[in-house]
Image 1 (cartoon, rainbow, N blue to C red):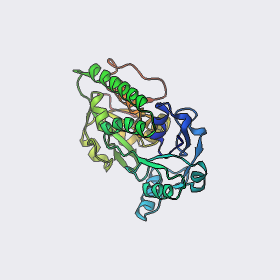
Image 2 (cartoon, rainbow, N blue to C red):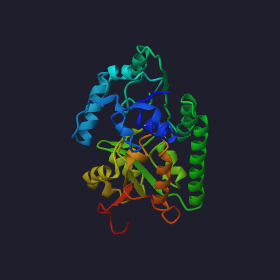
Image 3 (spheres, rainbow, N blue to C red):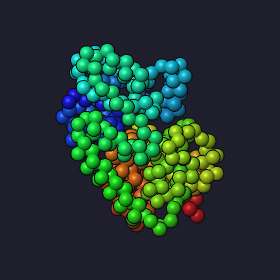
Image 4 (spheres, rainbow, N blue to C red):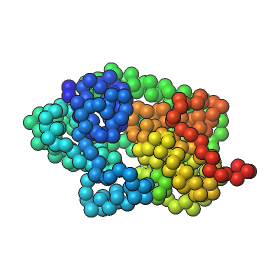
Length: 302
């Protein structure tokens, strides 16, 4: 089977299912696992590089308000590759090529590939997509194994943090303007032994004012700007140090791109990461590079 993956999370899932050799094309953002970025790229972003967080937000809002796409699909290359299966998504209009554009492109191909859209809003739906994609790609047994492993690891975190108290957590998915993490993030925080004081499970991420974040009185703030690694997340957080310091909370910058933004297998790593941040005495420290604690001038009483 020849598979084209138009979402980084589905690329990760396909490789985790042992189907990397069947993936003939991915997006320009597919950077995991190692080797995925070497596959043919079918997309490009129309938002130019080098913009600030506020400029990116403004550019995205402008294009979406005008009904314009944020990504372009290489139709000629897609036709040349003749995929049997195209994996895409429709849950986030700023995360991938438009679902309608993908369906239209697939309909023009002589191979008439199957199009499967993975559109999870909750952690349960993310996990349910594993066997669904595995069945579509002809790897049912691998899907069962991957699902069972994910379940075991999540259960281990829940058991480890049980009875350990629940720190108040604010997950910030963007900082200028502020976006509160939604979808699966509040569930990840709960499973890791915390209480999300702003986000709602299964609901879209939403904008908020700094005053609302401060009023929620978080004890831990997790800076997870969508699509950024831990280093870039830390840079963005330091850029808003004045606001964050006012919260009088511990602030951690995390690799959001790898462990929170993408609804794929590594969300389990994200739960383990959160478990360590909230209960370091109960959950082992994850490998280097996944997060950093920031000193942003909290009060001496904190």
